[in-house]
Image (cartoon, rainbow, N blue to C red; front, side):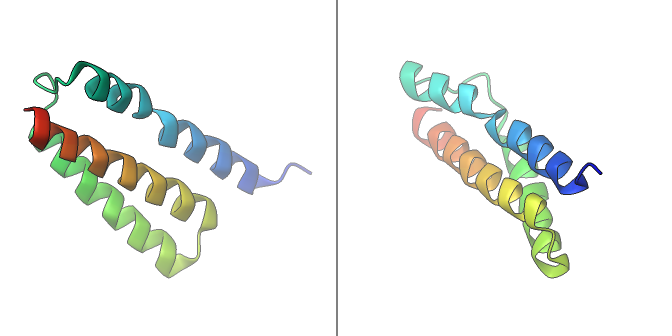
Length: 84
């Protein structure tokens, strides 16, 4: 039988790496003018709630993915503040 947790880890992995190209591009070009600060703040809020939800319900795949994604999104937010 297929382990359903594998789906969680695969989906979480894909979502986690989805922002990496944007963070790398922003760091290299030193430009974040096309990134909405509101979008970034809403995403940070949603991911923080997901981390809390996953931690309280012991959903390991979601907890790992959301925690990493939250860290990546916070780094994008910091780049947005630095490079405007």
